[in-house]
Image (tube, rainbow, N blue to C red; front, side, top):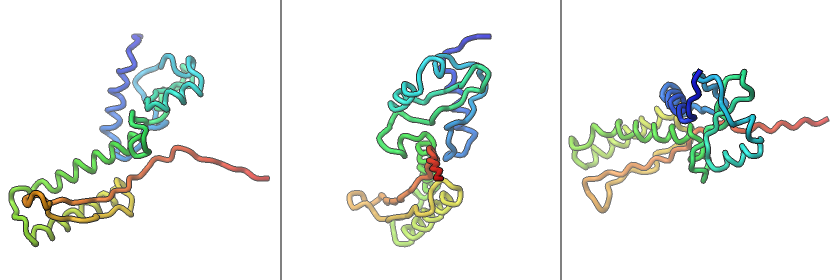
Length: 178
C-alpha cells in the first residue's frame, strides 16, 4: 500500500464533477478510491475543522480508518456569498453560461441586427431559460430581464438573464417540544 499526497483526491473530485449533474452537490458524498485519509478527524478537533472550512477549504473526511472517505462540505475559496461558496452553485452557473453561449453562437455573423433577429433571439433565450428550469439548473422564478442592442456597439446584442440557482440543503434544525 502506498501513501499518496492529498492532491490526488483532486482527480476523484473532478471525476465526480464530470459524471454528476451540474447542480448536484458533493457534501457528504463518498470519495472512493483511497482507503485512508491522514491528519483529519484523528488530528483536528471539530472546531478546528470548522475554522479551516471557514477559510474556504474543501475537506476530505474519514470518521475512522474503516469507513469510506467523504467530502465534509463542498466549499470553494470564495466564501463571500452562498452562490460562490458552494461548489455545486459555481458548477451550475458555469454550465448555464457555457450552454447559453453555445445556444446563441449560431446567430453570430449570420444574422442582421433588426427586429426579426431580436424577436428570434428573445425566443431562443426564453427557450434556453425554460430548459434550464426544466432540467433543474435554475429555479422557476428565473427570468429573461431584457434584450437590447448595445448603444455603444450597434453590432452587439445584450441579453440579460436573472438566474436563481438551486442551493444545497446544508443544515436541518430539528426542534422537539414536550
